Image (tube, rainbow, N blue to C red):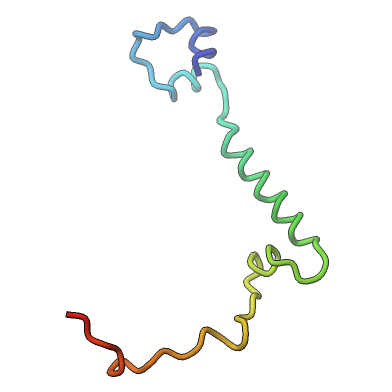
Length: 83
């Protein structure tokens, strides 16, 4: 941003927003686009993996709970009262 302000000869004391500077320079914000592209690349990378990979199972939501689940909780009346 500092470089763009210098190129456009906008003084640091001028009350111009970063948005104004980007519009004036006709620069599109590429950071969000870069993040989206990298996420999609990583997703494709994990989907192509062979076998049962933990990352792939988490992404697809196909993880089976170990040994049939978390187990059963005691009934509400059986819990100790803390007070």
